[in-house]
Amino acid sequence: MCTQATTRRPQAAIRQTRGGHPPTRLWDDPVVMTRGPGTRALALQSGAPSHDGERVIRARKASPTPPGRMRGHASPAALSPGPLEQVAAILGWYGSHARDLPWRRATASPWAVLVSEIMLQQTPVARVLPAYEAWLARWPTPPALAAAAPADAVRQWGRLGYPRRALRLHAAAQLISERHGGEVPSSVDALLALPGVGSYTAAAVASFAFGQRHPVLDTNVRRVLARMAVGRQWPASSTTAAEIALARSLLPERPQVAARWSVAVMELGALVCTASRPQCMACPVAAGCAWRLAGSPAGNGRRASQAYQGTDRQCRGRLLAILRDSDGPVPPAQLDAAWPDAAQRSRALASLITDGLAEPHPDGGYTLPAHPARRPP
Image 1: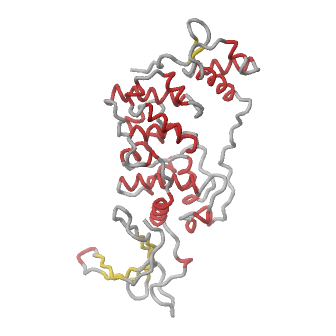
Image 2 (image 1 turned 60 degrees about the vertical axis):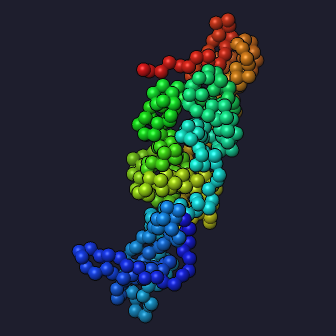
Image 3 (image 1 turned 135 degrees about the vertical axis):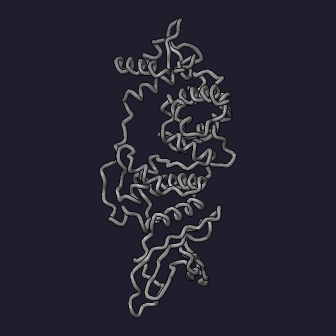
């Protein structure tokens, strides 16, 4: 869908009025639509029809035509883009700027979409791409992963970070195999029942894998909507009911278009409306962005980045890397040599065991988990 109207001759349009009255004749051009003496109905047109044949036009009644002015023409200041124009503009922008990511292709299975969403949690796309390809090459279906040992999943996860996601994906694959015939379920409720799947991931998989109509609110989407519609630099610290209602109100009616809209807003937040350096001059909705129109006021809702050096998280990563690279039990002395602070090392190792990422070996030492954690029936 194009975001800028093309110049063409005005073309007559017919609109049927209510109550059985004769149809009203309108003159449609790329900027305005006029009707009747002394009044103007302003409209912004999204441009050429989209791939599904839909065209978004929003008409808004304006003040009487000033004396001496040509009816049907308005100053740019009078044309303030509304929500429908913003939706159309973002969809059009996405059509020409979307990255070619493997999980967005028509050939991507629902399992591939689920794997990508789990991996993309708190992890940049550039780091996910090689891990995603390798994971699906090894386990192209949920039953293939379910048949593997949890330790294999943790090893394959490598240094992607937040390794509990590997165990949760393994547990999800087992549940999918046991209760859904090896196929990723399509309903949000069934997706929410899978380990490691929260409200965002369930909505994302239902939308992107099955073309359903759900508000999908990740960090990027929330930031775009906060700026574009609310006028705030940052969204609230956690998703609010008002955000969900706003996101739902902007969803196009057709489910397939709604799913495309959701990923389009996400892409806009990732590439243009970024957290640190928003590129407003390249934004397709900059003209109607509430935050920009307000002068881009600074907000205080952004969380400070978390430190890593010297933290328990770094210590956990160091210990887990040793376990991951070993074919057998790792003796305690080898773990002791990996981190100098004994108290922190002991705390990190205990947390790995609690999270199911490590376990004591009967012959001494520690290993990756040999068996999946127990799940409630």
